[in-house]
Image 1 (cartoon, rainbow, N blue to C red):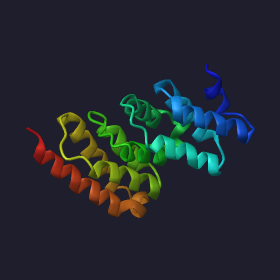
Image 2: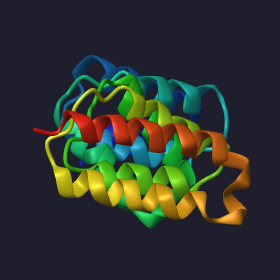
Image 3: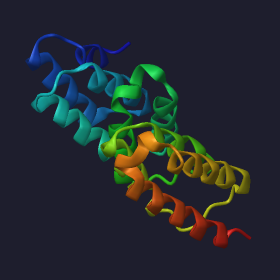
Image 4: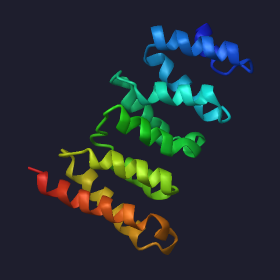
Length: 170
């Protein structure tokens, strides 16, 4: 593992800062998952915010699959809302993985549901009918769950957008 990736988890802020600068300048797809894991493990501070900023502006196409794999990883569940934010702010469409996105959005708190709804709303079409139908079932089940009352408005928005996407299927 390269020195800058190892530096992400250092207890010394200066080492972490230097690692972030190196990744910003020379980072490859091999840097994304370690950066995501370092973000998840770090306490709230300016360096964690810098990590989120870097993750949220990822333009490497490989980042989409890495973020989606992170959503499915129970060790990263506590940052699922942030991963959803990274997906939408980087402009990824999550084609074929809509079920995962909706499932994670429906499982979380208000922030997680909001980030999932925002990601979903940027989609104009879908190609995978089965994926879309499964996402609709998940949202429907969440709407019937009394414990989801705090995110009901977001769930209603997701339901409406998924119905609109249904109309785009060829």
